[in-house]
Length: 142
Image (tube, rainbow, N blue to C red; front, side):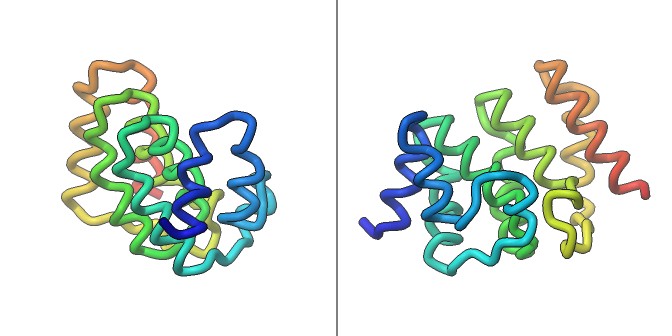
């Protein structure tokens, strides 16, 4: 297990989360996160965290990758639109649309992702997920 993987595991612990975020990203607040450049090892560990059995780890991995303008992060987050946990799906929809979180990102999504967001906006069982997916679609229309 790499040090970065250990830090991703710590995202599930409220007591260890801030330290883990600092170790992975070098920042903890949104303003600072918008300008960080993460290491490849931290990036890989966070992508692995997207498939973690603990939904808190998945949610926080999305949350941190949301601030990463690397197109690989966007591609890695897409499968979480089908996560069994509504909170994770909602965060994934946000991460796939928020240019405020990653100002240098082009904001472009593949047609298949836009179609998935449209389906979520219409039929996701969770109202908050539907709203977030609809918001993501509005961001694409700009």
